[in-house]
Amino acid sequence: MTLSKYLKESVSGRTWEEAKQLYELQDQGLNDEEICRQANISERDLQRSRGAMALAEQYQDSEYGDQFSDNHYIIFHDLLRFNTFKEIREWLGWSDEKLKALDEKNTAIFFSLLSRLPDLSEEGEYIEPAIKTQDDLIYFILIIKSAMAMDFCWKRMILNMPPILLPKVNKHTKNSAISLYMKLTDI
Image (cartoon, rainbow, N blue to C red; front, side, top):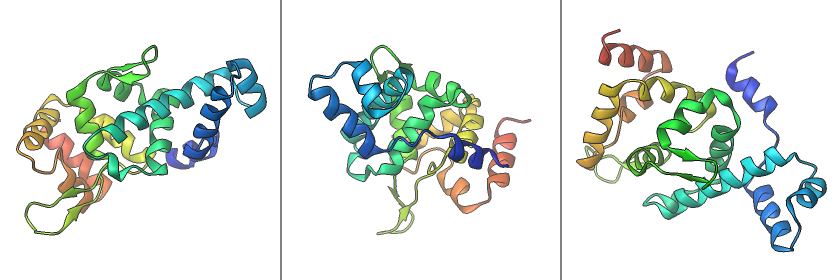
């Protein structure tokens, strides 16, 4: 079983619509225990859903907010749910208390990777998002571990060019992305 299939099978089913319903229950004056009972979820899952909703709101407030979709919420929920992605949360400066990614620079990079960007080499063309699935998050962990790759990403972003390794990651297989990472980091 692939990791992606495992993650999909073990997801609790939280969707953007379900998260909004949880907020509606809260707006009706229900406390956390009552919300959990009515929605048949654990308090931990309720907190995770609130965090994913807060991250979705942060994304919607960013320059890429008009591209928000249900898939973004699912990625945010998985990012907060699975311990596998702890390094990404740390890199974003995620605060469980504030329900916010606090590292503005890294958050901007992350949001850009979840978004379509103009292809500056071809007018009217766009580069598809580099992160679309849980598998992409796993590969992203490799990239954030490399200071050189992240430095490259930030410099490209400042120049308003496609950040990180988007063209290379999207035009090649995931294996070649790992090879590129190894090359950049001299592994």
